[in-house]
Structure formats: structure tokens, C-alpha cells
Length: 259
Image 1 (cartoon, rainbow, N blue to C red):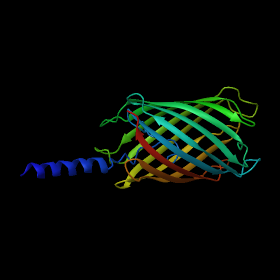
Image 2 (tube, one colour; image 1 turned 180 degrees about the vertical axis):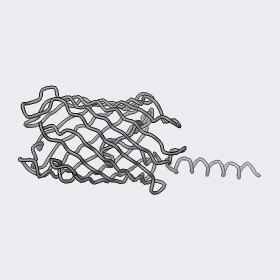
Image 3 (cartoon, one colour; image 1 turned 60 degrees about the vertical axis):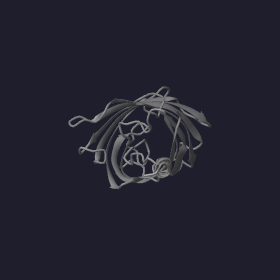
Image 4 (tube, helix red, strand yellow; image 1 turned 30 degrees about the vertical axis):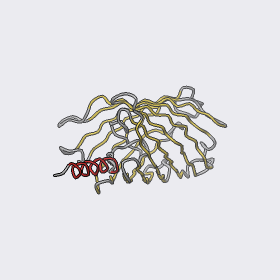
């Protein structure tokens, strides 16, 4: 084989490496992407970053102020350390519900404590600090979430079970707000094609208002468009007496390298 032909094969191989995207994990779940449940793995690896938009529309006929709310905003995710993820999310609520006109900047970090093994699940802790802004804003609050994910098979394409246990602490609650709120969420994710995952969850917990709880069942799809872009779409229904009637999730993500 001539040197010219060898050089040609090498050039084609390099071009294929550059052009062909490396697909991410379609079962890599974040909060509200594509439904509420999240997994025990950082959404981005060490040295990477991701810019995400997510929006959640909720219809709640039990809200005396109004039935419709849309919470949306961008999130920047940074992989500055191995097995850790740092996020900043300036979200804003619009609509006619009691939360309309209020914004919250969330600063949070997910730390993976252990990976998935044959018998034990992957474990992580996700901590949030939320700072309110906007007209009629409410108190700052802390959130701590314990996350477990168990693969139901030997490979990364196996279905996965997820468990989220969440505690929210409001620093300065008013007379109608719980200072502490607990929530449990169970989820299942599985691939329906090479680049698309189906995600189901069931959520039960306290609402901020004293005396009100809520329960949801959600389902959604997360699709990897290519090695950089992904899109999520989900919907859920309230299944308890005081729960909101329905909610819809939409997300769009773009990943890139920092270093």
C-alpha cells in the first residue's frame, strides 16, 4: 500500500472521528427533564458544561388566585470537579396563579457518592439554595435530596429504577406556609430506541401551603438528537384530592466542553 493511500485512509478516519458525534446517555435524567424524577449521576462529566432550558406548566383549579402557572428559565451546568455537578438557574413564574410574578435563582450541586454495582444502587446527594426575587417574592429556602439509581441489568442500556427523597426548609415561612416539606418520588426509565428513553414517575409530598398535599403520575420521553443536543417532553396528572389537575414539561439541552 502506498504512502499516499495510507495517508488518505488516516485522513478519512480522523474526519470520521471529528464529524461523528458521541451520543450521551438518553437515560441521564435531571429534575424536570423529561419529568420530575432525577438520577444519581451528574448530567455532565468532568470538564464539560451544559446549557439547558426547561419549562413546567401546571394547571391547578384549587389555587384561589388562578389556575395557570408556567415556571421556566435557563440552567447552566458545570462539571468543575469529578463526580460533581454545579448548577445555576434563574427561574421565573408567569401566569395567573398565586406564584405568578415571582422569580427564584437556584444555586445547587449534585455529588455522586458511589456508582451502580451488581447488588447496590448508585447514590448521590443534591443540595439547593434558592434566593427569591420579583414582586411579592417569598422566603429563601434550602432543599436536600437523596437520590438512588439501580440498573436492572448488566449494561448501561438496561432499564433503571430511581428513588428521590426530598426535604425542603423555608427560612422565613409566613402563617400559611409549612417551614418543612417532605416528598418521595419513584421512577423507571428504559430505552425505547437507541437514542430515546421513556421515563415514568410517581410523586407524593407536601405542598407549601399548610394542610395541602399533592400526588402525581408523570410520563415523558428524552431524546438525544446528536452528541450535543437533546430534547425532553413529559406530562402528568394529579391523582389526589388537593393535587393540581395536570402539568406539562418541556426541555432543551446543549452540551459542550470547558476544558
